[in-house]
Length: 137
Image 1: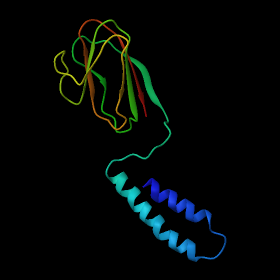
Image 2 (image 1 turned 30 degrees about the horizontal axis):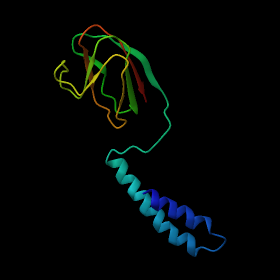
Image 3 (image 1 turned 90 degrees about the vertical axis):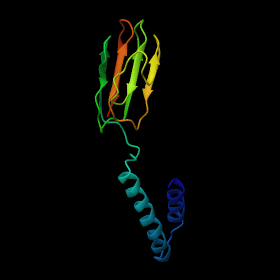
Image 4 (image 1 turned 120 degrees about the horizontal axis):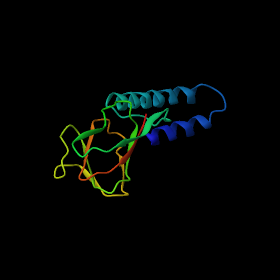
């Protein structure tokens, strides 16, 4: 897609007069728009500026809890374990335990949740601890 866009921009920069070059480029532009529409329909988000977020909030649960609810508007989520205990995190609806988890953060560890992930984020501390959670939307 980027190559198509670069070629179109290059072709358009050479236009000095007339309509033949513009007409040829309209076909390329329409093809690019079709590709973009298909990407959006497939759930691929186009890069955009962030407009807000929540956080930082704290997560301190030593029993399973929700770190961040599902959100289709979420562009990113960061979790920093500032506590002494290990924080176990699960991406998805499975209940997190200290033996069933996606990632374990030791004290001082940081997780940047994949930017295309908009589902539930759950967690549990093995022992008392505090995590800072920031969501970007």
